[in-house]
Image 1 (cartoon, helix red, strand yellow):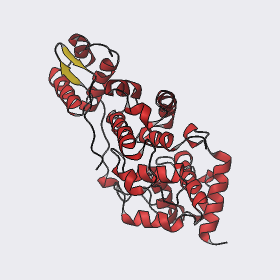
Image 2 (image 1 turned 90 degrees about the vertical axis):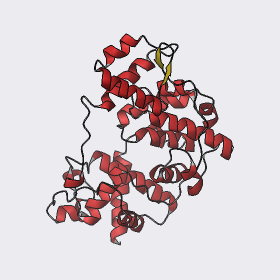
Image 3 (image 1 turned 120 degrees about the vertical axis):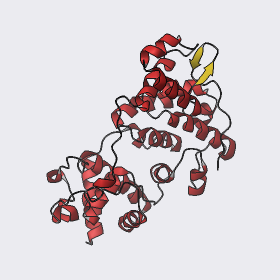
Image 4 (image 1 turned 30 degrees about the horizontal axis):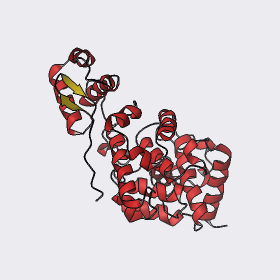
Amino acid sequence: MSTAQRLHARTLGWYAEHRRDLPWRSSEVDAWGVLVSEVMLQQTPVARVEPVWRRWLDRWPTPADLAEASPADVVRAWDRLGYPRRALRLLDCARAVVDHHGGQVPRDAVDLLALPGIGAYTAAAVAAFAYGDRVPVLDTNVRRVLGRLLGAEALPPPTQTRAERHRAEAVLPEDAATSATWNVAVMELGALVCTARAPRCEACPLAADCAWRAAGFPADAHASRRHTQAWHGTDRQARGALMAVLRAHPDAPPPPDLLARAWPEGGQRDRALASLIADGLAEAVDGGHRLPTHRPPAATG
């Protein structure tokens, strides 16, 4: 048995025993359900995504259903997942799928990448998990596992490199169906065992082959390039507080004093409201602000 075959067998065996029963992994979920899950899961924990994903798909089970929704409904349904511009990108994406692909999420990589808000990772995830194509899927968890396993790296670089992709392609199983399972298995291993801050090497099926472990767990070579995002007191926190008020008043602009109580610092409040308007997440009307009622057609290029 080759090294690659041993890695595949151990990882897939571990996954079969320890995989989480996440709804978007069901064989009954179509490409639209997979696409929605991948957009929601960006920078957001699974526990927060699952209930919103279920409600979203109950309400808009197809791209055509979502394409008819209003921006205000979409932003409210996004609830508190964070980064709510993703909700509007999904709306734009649904409209593009209806307008250019007959309402069916495309399979071709070029077509997927042309959809609004769909980048290389999401396109690969849809191709692999919805259509079973043989393509590497490199999220943060996969990058970390393969970096430690094959590159003796504590954590991957802040920006994905070509070398990482070549490494992932080199270890990808030849069989398409197996490669799709391998992708999600490595992702799960990174989420549950080979975590960023407290890896449980004693529980890892690949510990014996791990280059990082064999090298004595060297420190993060890219630590000086990493930037942690503050939250308390930032414009992001102000935007979130103001969005919560707007979502709670779907039929009319909330009284301005509610927005003032939600974020008392006037200059920052005005700046946050202006940025929400610029992002299409709010609009100014007589008497105050409200969720958007109109979103112009999105380009697909």
